[in-house]
Image (cartoon, rainbow, N blue to C red):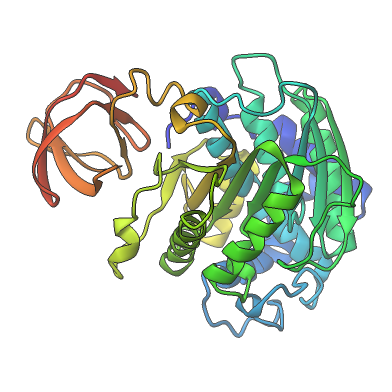
Length: 417
């Protein structure tokens, strides 16, 4: 995913200072200077980062600081399951929240790059983050919006979280970050047990325009088909006529394929509806069958490069991590009556067929080699060009010959870098 250099550096010392001040105010640390001590980080943060890494990567662990209930079995309240909940939360907020926020920021930035302007035209965007935790997703949207080239949008956030403490902490983070970035936002945290089959919004509330989850679906025990059925019912009822759904998940093979299966399940259900009013936007720019899903050894994920905050670099060094780049899987769906060409005008500048780069670019002599995905599925191609191609670049009106594993781009009408 291509993002601006300015956005890649946006989770800077100013935002980290705001996060630390809230943590100190809420007694998670004694002072913002605590994090300057390697001894404190090694004792109170790094062990819990390791426990979280075991969880996120679905690894067996005998670490006694890890939650006692497996996350993969369903929506457990793992914020309180560790032996030291306060430091466990601290490990997540300091160790993982900045990177997870930047993942969501890159998705919002990509939508803006491709010309999306579908929501927020008539006042604040009414937004839901489901399973919000400390508000990583909402913070990511704010980061991405802060670099919008047009008038900055305002937000009315509702953060749904089953742990009251982490939900309230998240609302403080989200309010402060929006303020630091010069964005207007109203934020409320709603404490409730989360189930995919329970509707969220009160009966008399206005329909939401943005439905966001970040690292949520991977914690559900239900199948992709069950989640798709439940989410469609929810979106039909709770989302406005023009709305956006953003789902961000781990880049792990199992979790990425679960998201691809969810996409297929959504499409299967839409095929039996008249006037479905839903359009899949990203990463695949359409409703074509996913060949990555058809190949049991394949999966689809994105990656974004960022400038880590100084504290993140320190924690990576102490924890033995290397997070100069952030992999993830994602899916963006619009609830709309408009065509994808209208929704993403910069992706379809001349209404020609479009192929999107879905891999890094390697060089074979003077040729660039990469995978693209389009109406004809996923294929490996070579292309001799001076364009600065990368993940997310678009080939408009490309003429491709050869087999799917060994194609060549002869010419394109336009390259959208």
